Structures are given as C-alpha cells and as structure tokens.
Length: 617
Image (cartoon, rainbow, N blue to C red; front, side, top):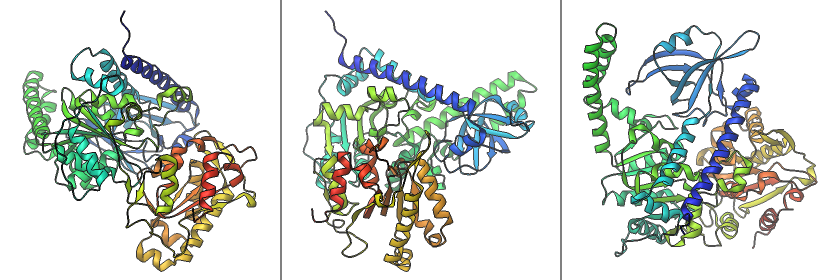
C-alpha cells in the first residue's frame, strides 16, 4: 500500500494556504480599490494623483515606456517597485473615478518619477487625451502566478535533482556533505569561519543563522566569493529588492561581476551600473541593435516582409548580447519572485544563495530552487516573519518559512553566528537570553560602548503616571498615542542637550525612533518637522516602523510602544520577533517608552521591565 510522501503533504498544505492568502489579498485589494477615495489611496502610498506625462521612448529592452511625474507620499517607498502592475485612471470634476484599461508595469521608480512600460505606442495617445490623470497599483497577479507555478513544478517532479532537493528540504532524505580539511579565514571569527566551511562542504543545503549584528552578510559574501573559486556562476536571491541591492553592492566591492535582474530600490549610478538594462546598453553591439530596431519600426509602415527580415537579425543580435552578459557574470542577482523573469528561463545554477530567508514565504523560495542544484539559506527566524494578510492562513502555518522548517528538522545543516559587533553587551544580553538561548557574546570593541559615562545603556520610561491613552485609527495604520509621542520628542531633545549639540554634530551621532504602529510613526514625523530645536539634527534622525528598520542600526534608539489600556491588551506586540528587531537596532543607548502596567501583563515585557530597571543583573 503506497503512502503519500511527507514532502508532498507539506507542499499541498502550503499550496492550499497560499490559495487562501491569494483570494483574501485579492478581495481586500478590490474592495480598497473600489471603495476608498483617491486621497486615502495616495496617503496609503498605493496611488499617485495628480500626475503628468513626460517623455516617451523605447528602452534598451525594446519596451515602449513613458515617464510619469508626480510626488510620492511618505508611504509609497516600497510600493511602486520594479515589475509591479499599475493602472491609470481619471477623476472627473464631480469626483467620479474612471479606470483606463491599459495594462502597464513599473520599470523604474523614484520619489518624483515613475517610468512605466506600456503595451504599445498607441496606448500613449489614450493617456495624452485624458485629463486629471492618476496612476495606482493594480493587484499583483504575477507574483502569485510565479509562486503557484513553482509549487506545481515541485509537486509534479518525479525524478532528478529537484526531487532530491524536495525530499531533503521538507522530506525524510538526509542532507549530505563533502569531507575535507576546513579552510582558514583569519579575518573571520570562529563561528563565521565554521559557517563558510559548512557551506563549501554542503551537497544539498546549509543554513547561516545570523542574529542581529553578527555579520551575516559578511559571512555570506565570503561564502559566495569562495564558492566562485569552484563554480563559474551562482544565483543570489532575497525577498526584498533592498536586500538584493545590499549583498550585490558588497560583492561588487569585492571585484565580483554581478548581473542584477530587475531595478534596484536605491537609485544611484553605482547600483544601476550592474543592472541588466544598463549593462545591455553598454554592450559594444548595442548601438547596432538600436539602429536595427528603429529600422524595423519604420519598415513596418511600408514593407512588412523587409521588416521581418531585419527583425530576425535584430533578435539574433539581441540573443548574442544577452548571452554574452550572462557568460561574463559571476553572480546573477534578483528577488525570489524575480527569478521567474523570462531572462532566466531555462538557466540552471549549481549553487543558490537566499538572503533574508526567514522573511520569505516558502512558495517564493521554490522559484529559484527549481533552477538550482543546492541551496544556502541565510537569515534569522527570531526576527521579522513574512508578511501574511490572511489571519486564518497565517494561523494555519503560512508564515512558517522553509528555513524554519529545515532548522527544526535538520539541525546538522545550521551554523549559528554567535559574536555580535553592534550592541553594548547589556543591550544585547536580554535578546540573547530570550531568543538565542544565551549563546550570543559581544565583541570586545563593542561590549562597553556608550555615549554618556555611567549611564545605563538600556532604560524603560514608564508612561503610566502621565495617564496617556491610545487611540485606534484604522486597520492599515493601527493605533496612536499622541501624548506618548510628544514625550518621545521631549526625551530625544533632552538627550541631545545632555550629550551636547556640538558633539552630536561633530561625531555624527545618529538616532532611530521606532514604533510598531504606522499612525504613531506619521505623528512622530509631524512632531519632528514642527520642532525648531531638532531642526539642525533632522538628518541624523530616522523615524520608522519596526519593519522599516529591519537590517539597520543607530547609535541611539527610542521605541514608542503606544499601547495603554486597563485590559492589558497589547495586540500585535505579542509578536515578540518584532520587538527583538526593534531592541537590537541600538548600538549604545536604548530607551523604551511605554505603559508598564499595560505591557507587563505579558511575561516577555514583564521580564524586559525587570531587566531594564536592574542595571547590575
């Protein structure tokens, strides 16, 4: 009697939960798109209005694009990304909204300009004759389609390397390793050196578990660099464009030839220079190709047969350029969903490196795994999990990542980095004890780092005696505590005065103000803008959500926890991994601002309160 393999059962369940998430996400998007006003969509960062059209042209990939001008809101930094689907609309004088049925995609995004790919040149005339024009995100079908396709491919495999990887990662097959004398890397610490060696020895899978400040990226870059001594090319992916950019930049700085598929999140010449589009334009044969494409467009009006002959030659030259770019690249870098790009169709890689793996939904990881012979994950499952919108799907396990599953079932493939180079030892210790079994240690050069002599690096300012109250704003923005926000600004100002304004400017001491709630973040930003004393220091102050601070660090961090009620209801502050991220952004000083009686009904916050008020523990 045959039984269904464990790996198949896992994948079928995951596919079912992803379907729930897809349907919920689509329903919410359609409701928001149809019912919410243009002003609220602009504020949410999913819409720009009003807009104007700029120049239009064929880009280096022979796509017809148009520039769209219009200021972004504070919130659309990570919404209008490369590859996202968008749609145009008009708003009549009586405020009625009409969609223009033109499918389009973002090719490039900045604060004031979008470059949008249109299906053809004729679409431009429709847009040019439309008044009071706007642009908004449309539902992201393509990402879900890529994830479902990958799951179906993994489920349907019956032999070969993909089957072996499936059974190793989520089945009962044991991971295999090569055996050789470990290599020495004197510039790495012992745990980093061990991790690099485990990666080099892994036949199937290896995991770098990198808690905050432990040099995960340094370790991963070293492993990639060393792997390239043995392999001609590797694939490097991450969940976000920002993470792909960061590791790509580190590799470029090491002299590695990186080919970036998709556009970077941070727009500057260095980041753009190793994108596929820029490198395509820089190829010696590109001018010839551009002339041939122009000829094809002109001939289409007069002689279709000649146009087709030139088009075939142009496509052959385009293929030649593309293949030469891939042949010269040592690292191909893209997001997980970006691995479904047509440019990568039919390509395979010996080694795949996935950064930010603990923030990636499992289905997204399978997209590049389908193109690879072995996979290395790097991340920290004790920090931010994937963002899941459907509560039922999340509760049923959709947020349980592929990396987490492997960590739970195959500890022999995991390397923990245990020396952190960011935080004062006292800031680090609580996080280490609670999340990492006390295994972390502070490097000697940061153990006692501080700004003010004899000041405790961590303190909790209890707001209970001030009788501050929280307010619910909206599901998308959460809660706000205005009096607490004003106290945060006061504490920040007082700390700057205590340190000395000249010292802040001379030493470029930087500050992070973090709140789990978007509404509180917006209000704090408003208060900063209105505060005359803080004006000279604004370039040193960053205010954002916990998610916005992932991967960042600051000398001084203030956390506004917002919640204040008699019931001890702390909502999603119960997601302790989010708090782990917030606390571990601080290098030298951490200030937690919150209502102690409300928060300490939860045992984590009770332990944190006790830790903060006992500096000698």
